[in-house]
Length: 119
Image (cartoon, rainbow, N blue to C red; front, side):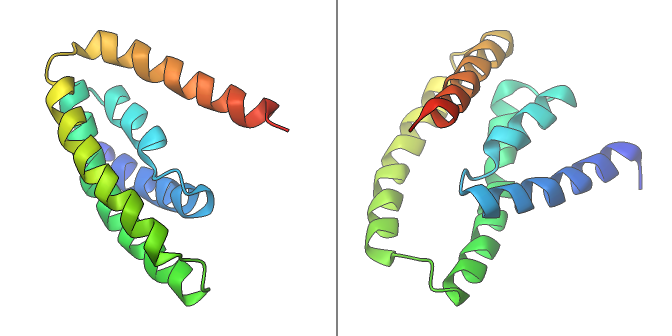
């Protein structure tokens, strides 16, 4: 197995643990890893979603066993997410990878600052 495949597998383990622990889905870690490995913004986001789908299904099973799932609100979030995902996938087609990296970095910094300074 080559080093890139091993790096992606190891990244999946780290992202899976972080996503299940934080509920952030894992894309905040997976997309930068894929960008670092040379993926275009569009391919990094699309590939990340496949990984997130698998990670999320596993995390849902684990959290369900612990009775940590509110299905009503989860399904409502999912329906809204379906609409947003369709829009986002179409918008990213028009964003160059270099611009995407900057936008993504700003979003992550703002999210981190919000979480850090929130009372």
